[in-house]
Image 1 (cartoon, rainbow, N blue to C red):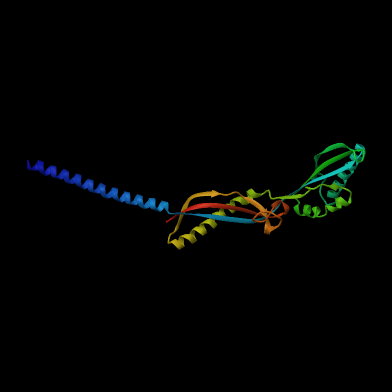
Image 2 (cartoon, rainbow, N blue to C red):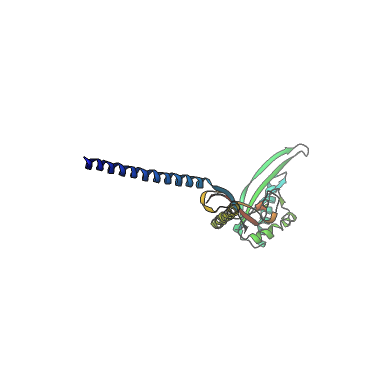
Length: 244
C-alpha cells in the first residue's frame, strides 16, 4: 500500500515538474515572441538618391521643309533641289549618305481667289541620325546655312539628343541609392539610440534623364534632356529598414 502511494506521489511530482517546465518555457517563448514583434514594428523608411552625369550617344534631327508655287512641276523641281541641298549639307559636314533618310511628305493644292491662281504646296521630311553627337551638334549650329541656300525649314525641325545606354549604369546607380538610403537611416538611428538592421521592404523609383546643370527650359532637375547632349540620370529608391 505504501509503495503504491509513494509511486503515485512520484508520478504527480513528475507531472508537476513537467507542467512547471512547460509554463516557464511557454512564458519565455511568449516573451521572446513579443520582443521580436516589438522589434519588427520598429522600422524607418528612407529615400535614397543616385545621380550620374551622362552624355547623349545618339543625335536625331527631323528636317521639315516645303516648297510652294502655282504649278506642280516647278514645285516638285524646287523640293528636289532643296532635298539635294540638305544631303550636300550633311555630306560636307563629314556624314555618310546613309545618315540621312527619307521621312515622307505630302502635297496639297487649292485655288486662291485673291490671287486667282492655284496654290500647290509640297511638304517633305528628311531624317538625320548619327552617333557622332559632337559633330552633329556643330552641324546643327550651322542650320542657317540651309536657309541661305533657299531651303524653307519649317518650325519643329529640332535636333534631339538621346542617352541610350541607361541599362549600363542602372545597377551601379541602384546600389548607390541603397547606400544613400542606409546612410540616412543610420543618421536617424543614432539620434534615436537604435541600430539599423536588414531591409524590410524596398521600392525602386523610375529612372529619369534631364539636362545637366539646368541646361534648357523645363522641369526640376535640369530641364528638357533632349535639348542638350549633357544630361543627368537620376533615380530615387524608397527603402524601409528594421531598427534594432
